[in-house]
Image 1 (tube, helix red, strand yellow):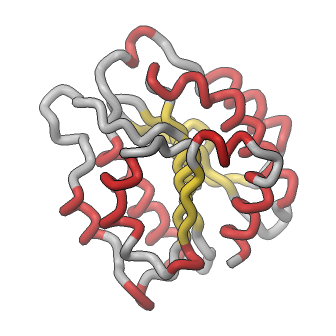
Image 2: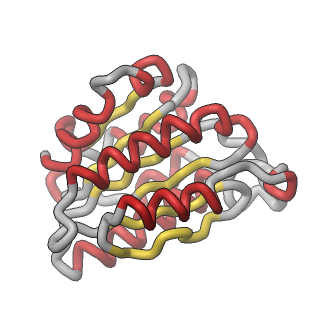
Length: 185
């Protein structure tokens, strides 16, 4: 599961996010593995439903839907995005899949209309904790300072089941391997 922040503050990370997602897809087994892309702005919605990791299909979907548009200037609903990610991970785990959620964005919890879509540290309790948490979670491009906001969530994962890459780390050649290692852990 890839949650892609398409807000204005994360727009500069979209080209590298695309590279990383396509790189991950290349390493997946088209017969056994599935990938889903979720677009995050002031709301969250799937842009590539659970499907085989076809690079041409992913590339065309990302070209069409992952850019920032003026109607997106209403905040970033990390709370909604992470809730949707959790629900999908639980649903897919029930179907027998090992699940990894990758969040591509700066982590800026920009206010959304009504405020109900923003991330709150208390929301972390929705995720299973400790050994009960068999999911994996990675934040890619998480800017310094934003990592503290999501720390209660990261604390719910075993150390080898979560990863945080800041913008410098995400731009390095080793970023793809780090994400592939997380997926396989």
